[in-house]
Length: 549
Ligand code: C2O
Image (cartoon, rainbow, N blue to C red; front, side):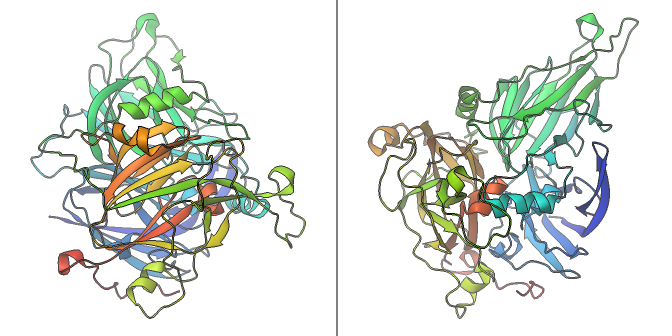
């Protein structure tokens, strides 16, 4: 076991993209931020120092944080934010995980510019369950706004109508040549006949993406830092929050026609209407070979149509755990607790006192978002502290419902229960409870599916489907053998996903839609997992530098 030390200084830096220079909040002046490298079993210690006026916290997305919930990072859930001048040390050990994850700010929409990759290598002398790649390359997909990000957030929150669409998507912070006035392109120089591992992260705020490389197929080998049964594809689908590792092998010689440059391109997968950024980001895979008839053409991949739901559904159906003796799929075969949560958008009346702003959802309403019709409200203090120091009463209620307020046609047009109530309610689970959770989409208004992310756990996606979930016909088809294990699942628009997990990590754990605008509107909730018996089942006390509220 090695201890890895990092220092993250949060500060403002001027960044120029699309001929537009603006101050951006960054870590160590980098956009995207620094990569964290570690090995399975390592202890990672990151000192975060806040030099900006905004409040900051950082979340290590997908790291299980076994009994280290104080280091998880979501603002007002596991910690209060760092105000200007404050520092906090995140200290955790990576247990039983290897692969690609990522880190991002977890307060307001700061993650737009405050994010980076986490690369966890297997333990020494433990090979990958696939051929060793010649080179490994992180690919971080993000979004760029020419406008001040704060204005974009305000627009989304105040008017309740949705955010201004981004001006570009980015690969490793660079928009690429398909945008006007874009001088920054990610270029991957490759040698012929070599295998490359791309560690792909979707860090975009609000968009699921398709990604492809012209003239090259990819083999998916891992998602969310869990190995999968390898399969080939020309295009992959990735929701915000998810990570996907793919291998691709370069050709022996340059392409017929002399083409030796190929776009790696991404654009959104959007299932409904509404306004969104439908532009395409491109980087270039460039062969280190040329000959007398090398062409200057850069070949473009064919990406699925923006609304190609069946492509996305087929892609997720192909994802299976390795489920070998070395990497078993520990799917709970029986469940102690069955839960059914609706996730979706609704329309609430426009609140009074908005100044000149008007509500921009249909008929002068504003969008809201909820889980079981409860729109989660963040408290002013951190839930984990309130839970740990039992004297802090009244911060949250423990009556989060197991089911929606009443059964209705969830995928009707419109669903007949869209009004949400505000609340800070949590679902309490005894230690080691096995949970089956159906996530049922209800959102006719949404343009997207909901990438639901659970902190503190991986879960198994045992089923997925369209329409209303039906226990008697759907449950018998659940895959309890080799379902994909991950931390973020795309709940299809007008459909459902069934997940199972074991509540073996004491603490308070956030669960939310990873589309930032839906999170802000209330599509979030929290779990309290109680201590079990003995020190290995108990959350230790907080570190002394935990920021106060
Ligand atoms: Cu990647 Cu709660 O977040």
